[in-house]
Image 1 (cartoon, rainbow, N blue to C red):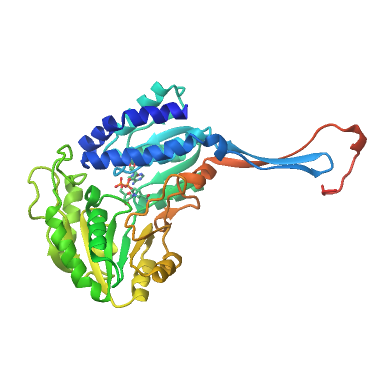
Image 2: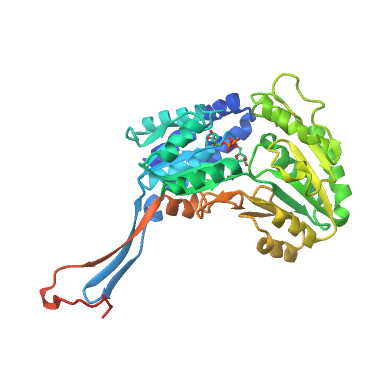
Amino acid sequence: MFFRIRELVHERREEVARILTAEHGKVLSDAIGEVTRGLEVIEYCCGIPTLLKSEFSEQASTGIDVYSIRQPVGVVAGITPFNFPAMVPMWMWAPAIACGNTFVLKPSEKDPSASVWTAELLKEAGLPDGVFNVVHGDKVAVDAVLEHPQVAAVSFVGSTPIARYVYEKATSKGKRCQALGGAKNHMIVLPDADIDMAADAAVSAAYGSAGERCMAVSMLVAVGSVADPLIEAIKERIPNVKVGDGMDPSSEMGPLITREHRDKVASYLEEGTLVVDGRENCPDEGFFLAPSLIDDLAPGMRAYDDEIFGPVLGVTRVATYDEAVRLVNDSPYGNGAAIFTRDGGAARQFQFDAQAGMVGVNVPIPVPVAYYSFGGWKGSLFGDRHVYGPEGIDFYTRGKVVTSRWPDPATSKVDLGFPQTR
Ligand code: NAD
């Protein structure tokens, strides 16, 4: 079944990518990239017999064998955000169904069409009716899912306040829950970094998908003398980012999701030192905002503290590595954190120091490959299991240990003592 699903998604990935571009606005190449990363999770699930293999201990006691098995939890719900309408649901439904559960998807009401496309594709692949289900709606639908007594587990991805709400409500009803929240990802650049490489990475990671990615780099932490040349290099690159209709192959960045969101993002351009103003030079029709760059931000400013979730890159200047790490660790979020340097010792130290679930070394968006798990720390994740990869398999299954003996009259006797190995 999963090989068939994999083949169908692979064959049709451009078809669903076009739906994403038309509805969400991200450029087509980015939409194809989203589907490709989701497909990797489906491919991982093709190995489910191996992933569900358990342990066996022969002759743990006289005539006794002990083994563990993993079983599905039952009905699983997935509640997903607008920014990855195909990939984030794939992080959930693929492992949930591969582990033997049924799945109810409550997609974002802002771009729900990819979920309908997925339901049709899974039916065509031969998945029995009732295994994958879609419920549309907003808070009302979410609350119905959270209150339903037959829903055993809930996976959520979205903003931090809603993640906290979903986690508290689901667990108060006795459900298992993993709720991934928002982010404010810092990219530290040390003075010895390759400036061109760091500038390319910052522009790609801050403005790709119009900054509407939970792993986008939104704060650049420039250490010591690197600040001026780095800002200059980023400033030079920004005019080359082509903003326009996502279906136009020459566009590199599309619009934001709604007019309200575009206006909210633009409201952050009032603090610090505005180096590049994205309100200039962008298409008039649609919810466009071109890349913006703000220098001299610091904790306590809205543009530093809030998750902006748009094409705005902030810069904060610090004198030392220790100050930079303190900024990362003082953040209420802990999704991704990256360091750019040529110093292996500093990079190695950073991987231990950073209080974030996903760390990049000269990699700005360290989204783990499908055979690791994705998830943040602090306000970026409520719950104790990350999504997909081995932790996803754990989340969607329950463990059981079987202690077994087959009849052997020779050793059978009444014994009221606590079972011990002999
Ligand atoms: P959101 O929190 O507004 O919505 C997410 C889901 O929750 C949607 O299905 C929505 O219908 C539902 N919802 C919204 N308001 C609700 C309410 N009051 N009660 C119950 N349910 C409600 O998020 P969004 O704007 O769709 O997505 C952007 C956010 O998602 C950003 O904060 C981003 O960082 C985050 N995100 C996080 C990750 C991650 O892996 N940590 C990945 C993608 C997106």
